[in-house]
Image (cartoon, rainbow over all chains, first blue to last red; front, side, top):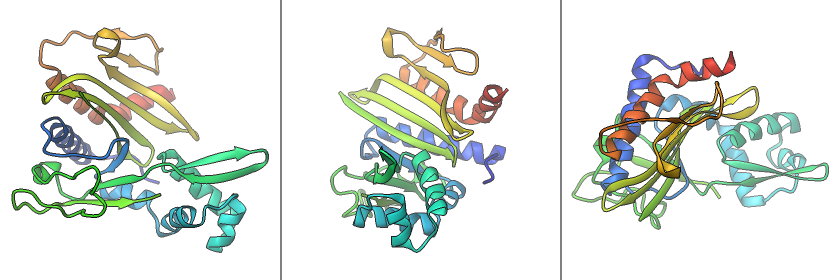
Amino acid sequence: MKNKLSGKELEKNSRDTLDLIEGIIDESIEIPNDAVIYSDSRSITEIFTKKRMELIDNISENNPRSIQQLADLTNRKKQAVFRDLKILERHDLVELEKSGRTISPKIRKRFLIFGLSPSFETIRGSAIKKDDAIQKPGRRKNNQSSQLGEVMVG
Amino acid sequence: MRKIRFTKVLTAVDLLDVTLHIEKKEVRKFALNYRAWIKDECIPVYRVNNFHGFLHEQRFWRDKRPIRLEEDMPLKEVVRKYTRYIILNFEKFKSYYEK
């Protein structure tokens, strides 16, 4: 994984975060509490690979009791699944519960928020309501289109 | 009082936890906690907050000791200043920690 960001990327990251915080303070943006927010495409594509999304879906739908069971469900090797789960665990997306020698994966977060606009400034005014953000992700206010994409896990 | 906590993902291994206590569109309390995954472990690297009654920062690559900060501006501006400070410097902070 490439982690070093350029000065331009750092500036953008800073601008996005400041706009988000300002929006939260002045109540033009509402987010669910304890959300994880992504705004740069590099970290999104680094973290949310197709195979990791399959793991999230499978944990959510099938509640596997062990990593081996999850590996069987996804037709993958246990080691590869474990490696991916550790990456998801880093982001508090899954929790690896140990019970004796068995580790069972659980979903930790209900909401992920992907900021898709160049800057959150452009979405201020299009508030996301806490309870219906997922059902109505494109909810509009003041005729502004929402550019805040959301994905629910768990 | 609205209390909101979220995590802003800076990179795949760098996370900024933001806690805001807001009343009448004014920040009453805040915490910014930058943590990083280093060698498969999640490490707190830098923190700034005004909990415990005073504004302070912690530079974990040195020690956990809180360092008092003096800022003559509204808390909202303090949050802005230190958010920007962390995001523009977190890679440097982490490199100090790794040394």
